[in-house]
Length: 151
Image 1 (cartoon, rainbow, N blue to C red):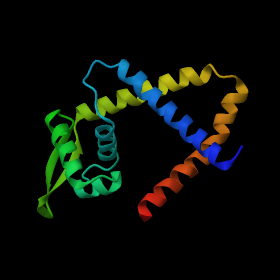
Image 2: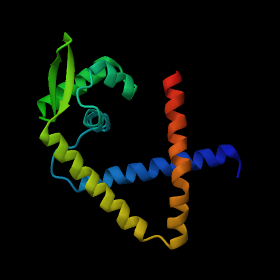
Image 3: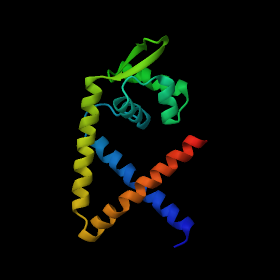
Image 4: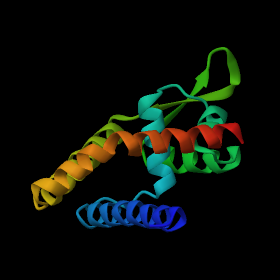
């Protein structure tokens, strides 16, 4: 297989899996849907409580005003607390609410159960191939991240 063809097929497969996981998880929830960027911001704030808006924008590769819009919506929906940075009263610090923690925990548990169910349907050879591919996929993600940080 040509390198370009392999790259296209890999990208399509990864995108397809991610899209199907998102669709399946959306169909199993009764709460209003969060957009992808909102989920990414919530996950970032969960990982780095107290992060500022400009740092979050840089981390997510989004414009500061776009992150501000996301923050406003997530504050309104009860998922984020926008506090004041004690070192710079003009800057905001973002904290997750218990509702955000519960929502992300529920999403993660449902995602794990969904993927576990479908991986279990694969034969042993396919499961082992996926397991063996994990280090290479993690390295690919690191390479993509490093390139994005350089630009």
